[in-house]
Image (cartoon, rainbow, N blue to C red):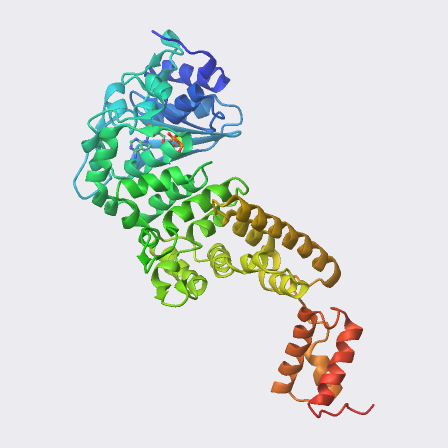
Length: 474
Ligand code: ATP
Ligand code: MG
């Protein structure tokens, strides 16, 4: 018998054990908390407690013993209860036995023993429990040798994997997500079972799938997850836009790169420099327009004309299909996809001030994110080119700062307003006003005049004259 007092040294565990003893039930901390303790990951704030009896009764008892009498949320239908206490989220459930129907991942449940409850857990590393009752406080119950699997860094199911994944296909996503987060392997039998059950992902709600995708994307090396999704055949069922990027075609000796594997490299690259989930999504989707726009021209070879525009349109459809938010987050991803080639052109050519001004003008406050995306997009294996592109981006970044300090074109506000133009030339709302406003903006972006009132006013008068407009007499 192994005892791990260190894992449950937080006073809350003793208190839960006392509450359980008073009710005469056994109680255990189980799942993610126990796993993460042995992995020496950050101690999780969500703690799962299983009672051999009523989880709700135990939660009530615990709440009554806690200072400040915290509120409990009871979910009667699920037989669970939650207590938020300081920074902890305690989730209580009664031990249960589950049986599944073919068309739903929601099981029929009945009361069960600890063993039943451990059997229904997804992975051996998530099925370990530590006892909280005084008589065996800290005892580890690990019937599937989860500890050994943590050591071997392997994702394995407690029961037959075919049944485990077919019962609840969300577990396929969870297996791949844990493999990505923890940098673990998935047992071969499990991988095969996932491949065999790929179609069953259809009974999982989009929201749950996206939750897992987000966790994969927020991992240190998301490509692990996406290549597993690819390998098991789940990817085309979830994100067919990505699968469509796979492959290299060759015509008349001309080849293009494999944009799927390229994309995964870009996502890994960007994950080293940003924790922004939506920027990581932008990296994942930045090339999706390349599949539908791919063409071969005898003279110029492979082209992906307007793929940024087509890709940004696809972002909307993809977000909608996956029931992702259709708000400013989506618009941000669209904008990043739309602009994803802009700085690259700059980095290849001579970098002019006016090109940088236009970039800052169009990207606005997202210009740094856009630069981060484009730098991550450098995946050339040619060290000379790699160095050159990186260096040019450095120059672009420098220029952005200079141009910003001097010209303030980010969140551009016209220095001369439409009203003032109307007033000066005694105009009613008309197309001339738009023409003059545009000309001023262009002159500023081209660097012909500074972004200042006096210069813009002077320019406006000249432009008016050229349009045969008369200045209103005082
Ligand atoms: P994290 O909180 O980091 O996502 P976790 O392991 O705590 O990891 P939760 O989703 O919080 O995951 O679930 C808590 C526990 O419940 C898991 O450790 C596992 O034992 C069990 N569990 C969760 N989802 C499933 C599932 N779909 N099938 C079987 N067991 C599950
Ligand atoms: Mg958890």
